[in-house]
Length: 169
Image (cartoon, rainbow, N blue to C red; front, side, top):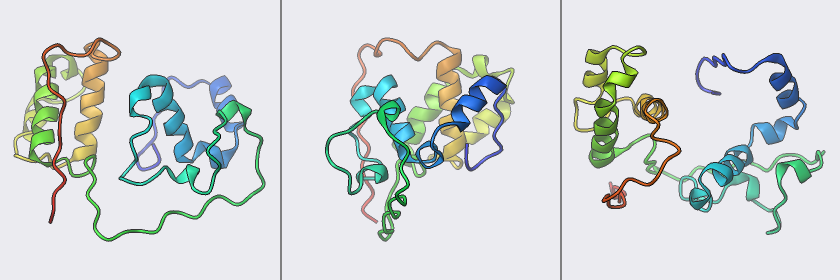
């Protein structure tokens, strides 16, 4: 939401007022995402984001408190983690295997997406061996899953875990 044009059709004034009453540093931290992952997909919560610890945990004691238990802090936010050379990110550079999985999933559900996107543009997006617009591909994947009741649901039967090779370039 911070990088695009935010359109929030289902947030009314009461929700916005409540959200804005929370500590701004917390609202813009990774801790919000961490807590949501803990509620929606707890098995993913301990996976390190971009191979590093969560930034909000830097210098913090191991005992975690939930957002509703936190007191507003006057302390300065933790400094951002230093950049390390060229790091690979599976979300922004999905590679051929993950691009194929994304494309197959979205194209199988093209009928559900038809009122929202042009079919020929959808096919063009996934026509290459590597998806050219990964953020758009992930958004389409999410919307397709939600429109076809793919989430929440049971784990697909007979599927192997997806293993993505980290490029060594």
